[in-house]
Image (cartoon, rainbow, N blue to C red; front, side, top):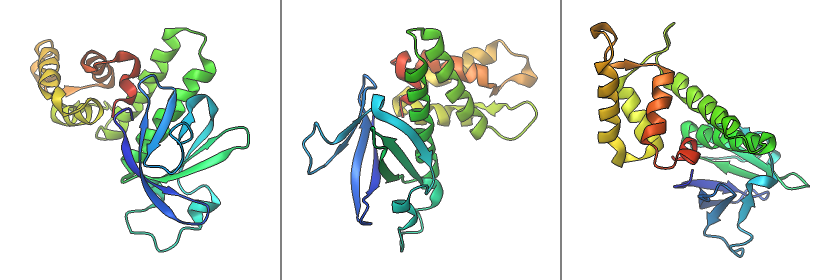
Length: 209
């Protein structure tokens, strides 16, 4: 999210605009470019966000017709903000991309609403989000384990392509501590711990997409 993604922005008149959205490094604002507005207006403060919804939940989104096949309901999401609950309606390029923003923003506003300056609360919210990501991608099984190659690909999506060697090293270190029949797979706890060490900025690791 800090690195940003290109979304299709939907206006009330059903017009569509392609815009590049990103989250400030201090996690205080979402901004988009290009925009006819002044830079100070082409943004939404995290403090002002009331709710983030996944799917076609607003009239503007439901009214959209003749959309490309890729514009499915699970690619849509809405950010409600401000005292009047204004809506920012968006289409991501994939369901996964939409889910990352919906989950990440909800985690972020949840931390802000409940934060008392306790870093343990922030860490807990981040770990819950990472666990959800892991369990969504892991093969269905009673053990909920993920093979090393899938874990590597998932972590690269979250941390960036330049982290592959560091991730492989951490996976290898974990394997050294396991019996042969347990090698090559990790659980959610191991995934989270590796991710914390790999991330360049731990305070926003759950948002580095």
